[in-house]
Length: 339
Image (tube, rainbow, N blue to C red; front, top):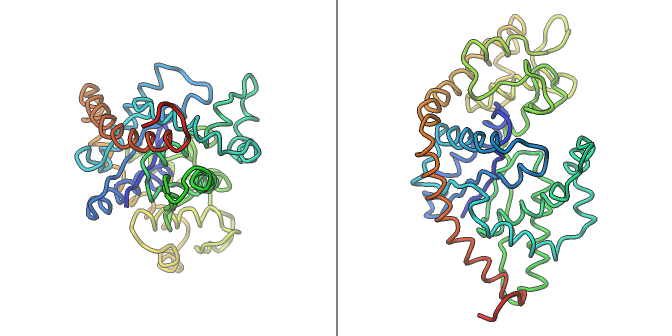
């Protein structure tokens, strides 16, 4: 099964990005390679321009993101790593798919409503069309699986509707566009802010002290985890539940970093002296998980020419696949000259 996912080159990548997306990419690379299929991972710079941004920073963040992906284990020889804007088929397919996308569907997207409220000066049309471009990103490659975080489930469902609608209208007897399946991690799909466990860990809406960044050093990680919000229950009780959001978040992080089930982790710490024991274990596990990535990143990020070569080679491979899909879409829609 071909796998595709995209990641924005905005902000510093944090633990939630790493557990919810980046580790899934590496796991998907192994599965797709074993089955003889491609895995494609795209740095979606066209999505990043739907909100206010600095052009110079966008390029820098693109290199930052690529270096983190490779440092985490993605191999440019085994996966196709590329920059979205380098494959123009994405933008054209987005426009073609807009003909089978209802305006009402776009208006109802939660992310559009939330982000449009934050853009006081200009609510761009690109922000509204974001899910259509996201659909084009995936459908251009006929990907069967899309690793995403929980917050992207709504966009994935729209993407599936768009593919079905296109096939029904233009496909006839053929399924021109593959209807993809999402893959959301069973553990760690939604890592919360350590200082406000009611909110998702984020580089834009979260707190600095509550956000563990992939490139944080060991001392910084330990400091942030030890200051994590739990609760005032006395004596302390380590269990998961909606009334124990801070503790649940720490248990989920530890489970994700050690490859265990959250309930097993909670049971292990049920007799702990207090929350300090849990925090110490979480800090140790997160440091062990992220330190190798940070160390490899330093070497990779210093060579921008090599990073650009990875992006260029990946775009050439991606373009071959997307071009074939787009040719079928154009032919089915009657766009351009007859084949």
